[in-house]
Length: 385
Image 1 (tube, rainbow, N blue to C red):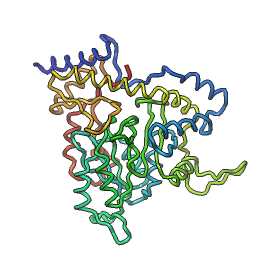
Image 2 (tube, rainbow, N blue to C red):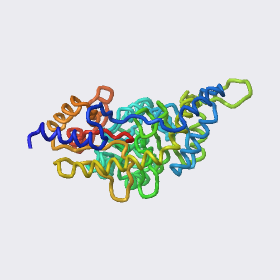
Image 3 (tube, helix red, strand yellow):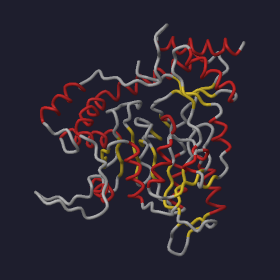
Image 4 (cartoon, rainbow, N blue to C red):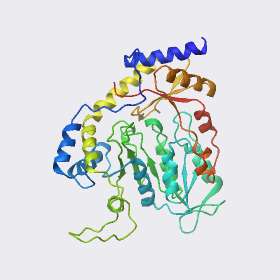
């Protein structure tokens, strides 16, 4: 089959799944078919449109119930949630944070906000998420636990203050293994679960395997409130601290303005929370619909020479995005060109963070799989149908 014919068949299969022949198909469009307008009007009528309001409270209760976390703290977006979570985990200036180079840049940016230095280790090809084997090899070669029980990079002398795996495109990484390694090496685990609301390892929701996890509700996520994020934790003290520092560290008082430490204006506004409550009511339907879409793609593509990223056994993906794996970068780019020229929005994986100027000083450790995936991955339309 000629390459152009191959690209045309793939594009046609996507159109068939979405039953669209001519119109533009976005990568992931929001769906507002529930109580969004009703709750927005209620919020406007209440005049509580900023970071204090009943819908913010409801978001936190409903997220905790859905994920099984004891506590959820709503924030303005996922990057703010990750920055605050890193602070809560003890990430400080001149420490190091282990993460993956294949991720949205927000993962690395949050580390830099703390004036810490990222350490990029490899991902697994079958998950596109952080590889526990690569993590362990890095630690065995470069780390030690000192007399105070602190994990130190022997090469740089810096404290390794956190590990941040990211569940790429909603597919769950080998998070149990990563959690076990972090526990053994005394490294706080902060899960970047921004893309994986509704994804599980066994019966445990992502974001619950370490001290803290974070979620995102950006406009392109499974559910959205325009922006929005959340911190998940089972630790009561961390939850109280999270709410405190994300509310400018203001000490409660009827009229005085006193802030007892460095705080951040990171809370989710009530007007966004109103949207999110309505979206949470529809989440089970969205997840079911997206699983059906993934099954249709698998059926339509089975006779074509292209792979789809699949969940690991024992895990449940939310199928936020469906991800094709091509044979090489040339084929990847050919399909990206053809599909976008023909009204089907597709996108590659992110450029590896270690290639970007902001991360020029980062430590990079055996990232061959990450480079292999960057050359081959393409995300295809995955909206609720």
